[in-house]
Length: 476
Image 1 (tube, rainbow, N blue to C red):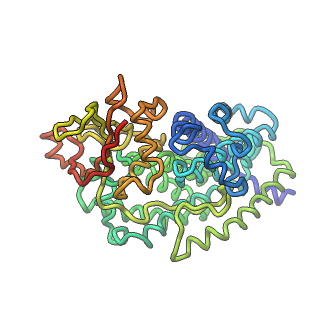
Image 2 (image 1 turned 90 degrees about the vertical axis):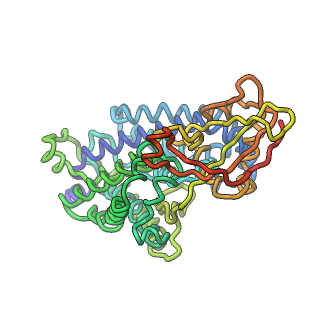
Image 3 (image 1 turned 30 degrees about the vertical axis):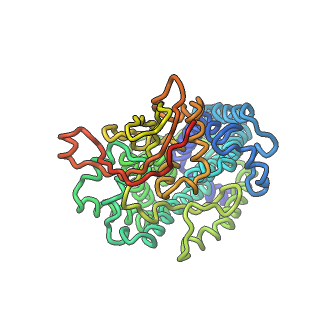
């Protein structure tokens, strides 16, 4: 098996170390996120109660531990197990025992988080959920640190990174005209789902800079990404440019762990020789892979090749799907985002009043969210790699003229009328801490970033203009 050893294990010890520890950290963030938000959104008394969903959804379509049993208490047990195993993975304790212990820990993390994602309905319908599951599955087969890194698995990770970037590039070029004329970033910093403080500065940069941003994005996603398949040092140079691109996206927006996870995948481009030549570090001695493990990795590679057929067809299709999984276990998915860019930003502002009778003189007080824009003088927060699921859904809801298409919205209003503690934990401010409001309404506003002069004079980050009533006042 000398030939197999040369083919399937090689000088990627540092890449494997960085990838495994960082994926463990993303798992930890994801499980903490679920612990804080899942029950208010989807628990037994959530906005979209999960038991109702499980009654009509078959296990084969959405595999999950919760098909056998769901209660909020059981959910917490599952998530706390995920948190503990994530910390074990991050700390490296999973590598201190036999190889099968490492495999069981990583496979358990995958099963536990897939159970959450597959029952998360719209609140978990984001591409980075599938990204974490696919990447997390590969961690099972990277092996413990005292073994040589299996190169085939490193190539699987590069193939995943290619699908993430190239799929995103294709969906843009095929989508909105503004991507082709390099003007999308004239709008996107302002209209993205969750701006951060740097978004304001980026939006106010000159148009030539926005066109340069867009061109660089296309160059990375459509051209540079191919460098991953070239010998060193080309693969490492491509990985560096991808990391730079994703780092820029991280500091100009809040996209949960999407950019962080993409950077992690890019570590697969760095060989030990590159690490040694740049940093002077030498990897520790590692044992050769056992024959049985090599065979498992080869079988996995064959499975990945087979599962790649549908994503490849999708990438070349004129009707390319975005962030789609072709199987119910989220392996070898297709990725891509923002094929179209919204040109105007609308925000739903939820207001309540203590008045029993509504008049023109009624005083309305505003509910504040943790991430989405509200008061014009509030600075956009830095949230990622954390994810505010209700805030993101509010961004989607503002694109429609009424709450009818969003079945979670009226239950949200109902719970606010009751001062529901679980839902209020997802908000940053409750203007009615002592007793619930008598009425609640929702108003739709058009938001734009202030100019530097406007902000200098007023201190505001946003200008806003009333558009229409989104939901008429309802009594408590």
